[in-house]
Image 1 (cartoon, rainbow over the protein chains, first blue to last red):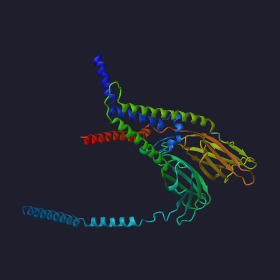
Image 2 (tube, one colour):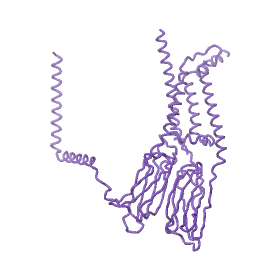
Image 3 (cartoon, rainbow over the protein chains, first blue to last red):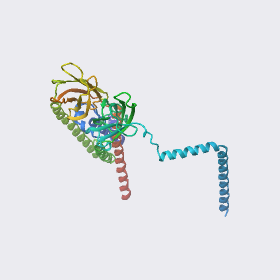
Image 4 (tube, rainbow over the protein chains, first blue to last red):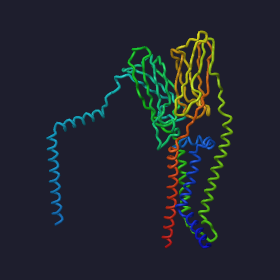
Length: 62
Length: 405
């Protein structure tokens, strides 16, 4: 049982530190930040960055 | 020697084949001489017309458009553009006593490279019925987005039979605001740098030392990402707080009543108080004689629409009331923020009468799919840079190990 949980932990660490997972995590973080800053309709965020959104190509606002 | 003889045989065969094809072509031409001749003549005519186009509208009345500034210098969603339309007859002389029916249409939808007002794309921006005694119509309008606008003008005589009614469609090409490209380039630069940096770290040695949960570079990267996330969220929240504090203090327009009266005139401002982005909103000025209640025709009225958020003039026009004492126009308030419509009548013997009302404009959120398309572009740039960083690090490591060997 001990051996099994240790190998599971090793496997989790390996998967987490694998390049595809690291790339996916970083890309998701980047996409989330971009969405929050440029595309979110949450009023406080939208109002704070209204001018920036209107001043950046390919960013839609209203 | 053998090779040379073989080449000669191949050449002879080739020449024979070319001769055969040419003779077939000759037979075809001879058989269809009439059609070939017609095709050649048509081609010659097309070439001639290409280089010497016919003056197609020279013998027809037209509408001449002048803008201030010139269209190439117009910046979308900035200062209003002054447009002057002049109706001219077939000889180019100005027509007088003209009635314009005008429609200004926005550029078509471009979801793959959206403008900042996607709801405004492919809609009507302005509809105006105007009397023009000198054949000239002038107005000012802020152009919301880049692209090709269509100005449809229907010109009819104010005096029946003075000339034949006609309509013309003009294209107005407005360039994109260069600041947008600069800001996009800065954003792309940041994404590329962050992507290459992240890829460089991810691509490094990932072996875990004893007692470590993750290798040092990965821990550093995670810490950096956390710091970035904290900084972004702090910035967003603080800006939102400051923005909302400012927001409560603005939108206080110096309002005048929507009805004003002098000894000779009574001016009323009627029309929509609620508007939606993407749709036209109708506004009407009514001028009557307060003593008799009769409508006053041909009274000159100055109208303008002001965006209250930054006190910017979006539309201005000087028109005349019609026989019912009305001046009506339809305009789209493309910015989802409160606007003020102001009208001023300056009677010859008394003080100017100014009326106004506020229009609440409902903004429409851009469709999700348009935002996802743009997000995919910017995220795609980051991912490509990330992969580039990994590849670059591995290539350089391989080079070092090769040299080491």
